[in-house]
Figure: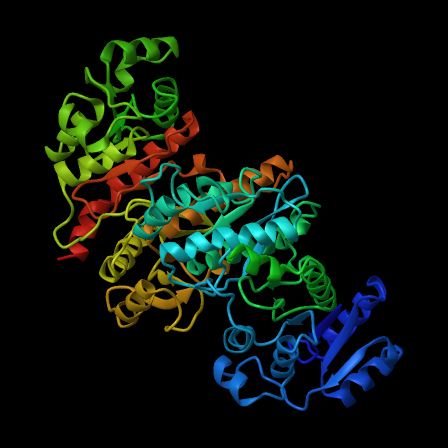
Amino acid sequence: MRLGLDVFGGDFAPDATIKGAILARKELSKEHAIVLLGDKEIIEAKLSQEGQPISAFDIIHCPDTIGMGEHPAKAFMKKPNSSIGVGFQLLKENELDAFASAGNSGAMLAGCMLSIKPVHGVIRPTITSVLPRLDGSVGIILDVGTNIDCKPDVLYQFGILGSQYAKYIHQIENPKVGLINIGEEEEKGNLTSQAAHVQMRDSKEFNFIGNVEGRDIFDNKVDVIVCDGFTGNIILKQAEAFYSLIKKRGIQDSYFDRFNYELYGGTPVLGVNSNVIIGHGISSPLAIKNMINLAREVADVKLASKIREAFQ
Amino acid sequence: MRLGLDVFGGDFAPDATIKGAILARKELSKEHAIVLLGDKEIIEAKLSQEGQPISAFDIIHCPDTIGMGEHPAKAFMKKPNSSIGVGFQLLKENELDAFASAGNSGAMLAGCMLSIKPVHGVIRPTITSVLPRLDGSVGIILDVGTNIDCKPDVLYQFGILGSQYAKYIHQIENPKVGLINIGEEEEKGNLTSQAAHVQMRDSKEFNFIGNVEGRDIFDNKVDVIVCDGFTGNIILKQAEAFYSLIKKRGIQDSYFDRFNYELYGGTPVLGVNSNVIIGHGISSPLAIKNMINLAREVADVKLASKIREAFQ
């Protein structure tokens, strides 16, 4: 398995990405090659600085970089020799089994849409977040910010996409899919959620358990929470706000510690033809390590192929 | 001031309501009469049971009750002699300065729309919740579940309504109004929030500070968070979920203790012609006491009149 890492993606790149790659290298087996994409000279210098043998990694020189503030689609089109541009080219040629970046997430999504393209039948690829639960497991929520206004059939497909992710990456058999809403009854909610409920109710493609509410977000009654990217993004950031409040109050607690984004490394882009991982812009070395681990997991189970099969 | 209480409203009525009224009576001055609405015989029996002089309260006999599960508007129309029906009649006749109930909230809203009616110019009356902040103050969020799909001009008006509430009840001068969104830039968000931002941006009727995100919900940068009732209800219930998790983890913390709904007693209905308070269905005696206190506050400052003036 060849796991590509955008060394120049993220607020603290390339230091954090190189350090994260070194941490990941120690954990991965020899079957998993870490492919570092970026300016070769800088990468080699950083590796030496960290006392690491250059031979532990594959390095692919990319002379260009897409900055965090650049216009995503324009930058992706204009910079084929950027680390993100080269990453997608290699994915497309099957020279990588997964490609991960904590860089310009819009450019990563542009690469998904313009280069490797959505899986045939998927209306809108999506991104996710994990929800820590009291029993040590996690739930999944999607979308969390890519698809803002969603039609009911898009929400329906999130049920399929989230189920595949929950099953193959989080080992949840027959995941329970819930639609976020403001009441359990099917007539509750805004016009979109009412229509989505009707579509999801009779699904044979996933295990729909009905509407779920804000109070159920961290509950084991639901494994995959479906919502539009507007609602999901607000839920995700409210959870971050709570985690921040817990830290500010000086509370140490093993459950709430699991709200630390660094532990999860990011999200796969679900519904595109290769395995792509998007990490948090502020990724630390630990977050980068876990992003590479997530890349390994989705590559090992061939998540993108599994999703393609689900839509055949 | 005459403060009406629906003694037969709430999951634990009439025990919790009578006990809450007794607690409130001890705190209120003589200028504030508590008017108990419900079956007189039962009310008097409960007061005796609690060792309270009946003369401490005004009692208005209402032979009927609207149950928690009844269809709100139908029940309100068909049961004029219910405690809720009589409460609104007395409000309309200016025999009460405020009316509070933890009962069927839909029936309370039906009373607002059908009996005392919205303030002229208010498109959609709304309900709120408070957001505890680290410095001991609270922010306001509205709507939290009454107006599910909101047009931009409705969201705009929530800025006025929330500002009045924040100013007169929470003593926040020139409250900072923010629109919930998924990014700070004005082009961010769903179609409704983009359009609402444009309307709110140039408002001279409130102090608009721009978009706020999920991470800002408990932050002092914003005093009044405007959102549709779908988003607001999910935010509110997610906050309840967090409070529940904190309790389940056995964490004692003076800040997080302020997420206890009992401390706030409910929400005024903003934008109707009299002072109406809706409490939580599960209200305990403490919550009922604070609901009566909130009724006293809105009656003292004449909140409904202040809002009427703002819309003139």
